[in-house]
Length: 423
Ligand SMILES: Cc1ncc(C[n+]2csc(CCOP(=O)(O)OP(=O)(O)O)c2C)c(N)n1
Ligand SMILES: [Mg+2]
Image (cartoon, rainbow, N blue to C red; front, side, top):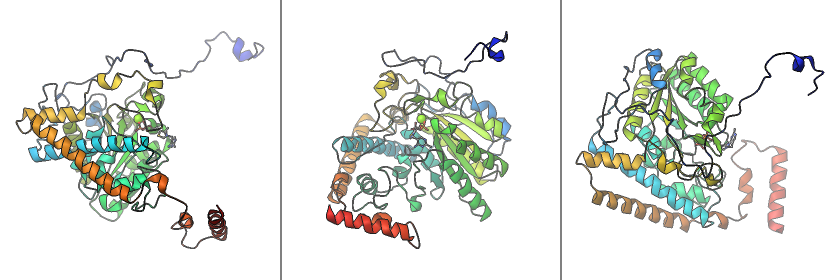
């Protein structure tokens, strides 16, 4: 900077940038008073065939069904039967218990990495319940609830986490990056954002084939800042693609807050307005609201009324992953102070209010989930844990990629095999 520069000497305001910073840091008292929370039952429910613009007022509110009194209210109440509600509750509890066990397994050195979805269990579980069984999900690493809700064996999840002999992905993926076509669970991608255009592309292919299956793409608040998010929305809008695009806004992207992805300017659901597609913003800790919104978007997509962008508003209650320590960048008590509460407690209280559940049955459910998860862990560990995986099958690292192995890969394979014999 030199004051000889004529632009700096001009008698004009100096240009400046705004760098978003979270209002609160470690040591501060949590304060969510600025979070605008719509009254349960207050949001209108447009017809699934309504023009996209009719949904746009919903991009700045929150679709909520469960109230503080734990009763279901308003036009979004999906009026689910008690068995479905209990199944969702059981799946959410299983996810939480599973997460706790696998987190502990990582701390015990049994695997290298784990990611929990604590506080976000309702989102994947209710979405899986609302979609058809053969719809295809393009998840992030925080939708393990999709697999649990669709009955994927817990032991197979653990085998992948341990990269053991039972791992269907043969140790080629980071722990928790599952993939299972029969369960409609597209391979998780470590490159954030890619699931959105892939979901749109898959749904386009489904339409081109005259199929009836739709796709649901998943992304976090932070990853919406990737170009892929916008490419996906453009294609979805232009071709009226039968896809549901879900943004899980859990307020954080590792240590960056949602403001760094643009949340100070507009809600993530409001992105839908600029693309002219339907948009909804939903209380992500309310399993009934999540179910109703996904069901609405699925019915809309399946009847060729177009795509929908849904923002699930929630809070990442624990660290980003086992490699993260959130006490370094945010107030410790925020998760407890989150005004939308805990999704499991809310659904439990709702069922109790209906006379369809009680504390004893809930305790039994938690015990049962714990026993099931422990049994699966025991079975999986018989096939080995991650640090036991040696170099005995190192040559397999080079397989399943090329139909015809190029000479340089063949040479690398030979060199690796020779080295592993020496070492
Ligand atoms: C393209 C890309 N950039 C950065 C990363 C590193 N990374 C992994 S997870 C993550 C945070 C993502 O946050 P968000 O999208 O909000 O999802 P959340 O973890 O909160 O569910 C980052 C930056 C990555 N995996 N891929
Ligand atoms: Mg996030």
